[in-house]
Length: 144
Image (cartoon, rainbow, N blue to C red; front, side):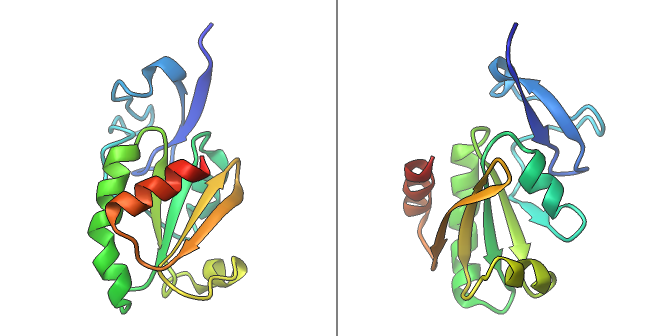
């Protein structure tokens, strides 16, 4: 029997069970029928944050950012490219700290951009400051 992973859909937040050997084969959400991977980093908010962080069996990298932050805007394309390269092994998401200040303050986010890697619902690594694509990928891979 093949082991499976829980993967949260970035579009509808449905939790899907995907066999390990099918992860790279373009799995679709059982709820909304859309692909589970290949999207821009998932936007997080108070309504979906806990589900995405705690129900994904793959690590989740979250970019804590704000629309007024120049370095955040400059890093956004590199973050999106890193997501394309590392999915489906890792889920990438973004949380706007202006819209969700309680989540950012609850995690003691002191500066942005800040990247946090979560695994099993727990923070396992944190990095502050803008990074180019290659550095994001190297950092995430070094943590995992």
